[in-house]
Every structure is written in C-alpha cells, then in structure tokens.
Image (cartoon, rainbow, N blue to C red; front, side, top):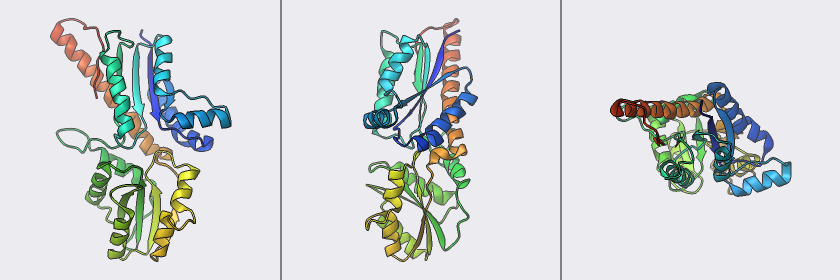
Length: 290
C-alpha cells in the first residue's frame, strides 16, 4: 500500500496560541477526516518560520523542504491543501511548483496535486459556489444584523477581484448590511464608509476576513492610531467593535477546507478510473488535477 500524505500550507503566524487555534485546529480536523493520510505542515513565510524558531523553538518547514522530506521518506502520494482565502500570487507560485513536480520526468511522487483556496469557484457549470458556501459558514460566527448594525470585513490584498465578487455574493445572500474592503486596494474603506452613511448605520462590527487574525492584525484594525480602521469609523460617528478571531477558528470554515481536499481526491480518483477504462488496464504515472 502506498504511503500518502497531506501537506497543509499557510502563510503561518508567530503567535503560538493563535497558531494552535487556527492552523493546528484545522490540521486536527484533517486528521479526523483523512485518517489514512499523514498530515504535515508547511509555511510560505520564511520570516515567520525564522521568528517562530527563534522565539518559541517551533520548527516549521517551507513548502519545498516539506516536500523533499516526504520524498525522502518515500511517500508516493502527496495532496497539498492551502489554507488561503483567495488564489493570490503565493497560491499560484505553489501551484506552478506542484505542477512542475507532477510533470517532471523524475517523478518524485506517483501523485501530487493541490486543493483550491476558500474562494475560487462562483457556482457556474456544475461547479460549487465557494462564495455562497463560505458566507453560510461565516454566518455562524456573526451576530444578528439590523438596519442600524453592520458588519465590515477587512480583507488582505490589493489586486484580488475576488473581494469585489464577495461583496456581490453577500448581497445575493441577503446580507444587506455586510461590507467588504481591502487593506491596500479595492473595495476601499472610504467606499464602505459612504455606504454605511447612506444606509444610516450606527453600529459597526469590524471582522478580519483572514484565516489567522494575530494580535498584530487586531491592533492594526482596532488600535488607537488615527489611521486605524476603527479610528476612521469612529471619527465618522459610528460605534465600533472588533471581532478578534480569524476565520481559521470557525469550525464551519475548517470543514470547507477539508471538503476542498475531498474534492481533489475525488477528481484524482475519477481521473485515474478514466485512464483505467480508456487503457483497458491500470495506467501508471502522475495525475495532476485542480
């Protein structure tokens, strides 16, 4: 029987408590969902890897090192599940790397492929609606909204159109007083403030739309500095509170990432079965599918 592993990939965090509540907790979820697989961890931030080792003596591998170790330990099947919100540059970088391994002549692994992030598919042509599914999961952590009470999601990034799609999908889901802005791009906080004023909202809950919401992030969003989102909103007359947990602490969100990995395994199985049928016998080789 071939040795199989799941590599759970994230940016990482230097805050050990937050690490365990989000990444660690999700990995535990994976261990239950995929008992026949070895569950491994990798971070994409070399800075986080270094700081975590220096401050807390916690050793975490980068993606390439983690895969090298799995190869050395003779794992034949490796499935990578990133804990990413959107398919950003880092996601595509990893995907390209995985694709090279999958199609290399050396065949490091018999099978290697990668799952999708939280938000990718919009529900067209029999594909699942990742946005609608994620919104239902997020609803489990939100308080009751009203005409005077709104939630504002702070997203990380600058060039991701996914966050504009998320805003549209929130409206489709009937969450009229739920707004999205990005820290460095579009949609903007200024634009959200205008909508809040137009809707005559009085109370705002700021929610980090991030897998990990570290102390640093919470301070950035809800700190006392003049330019913090909380201060900017208060300056416009809104009563503001800050939700201090990342999406990774939400069991429903953890379940979505587990499902995305199941989708990959199912696609591989179907692909493998198709090859068996067409070749009238088992085909050997690496299969790479999204």
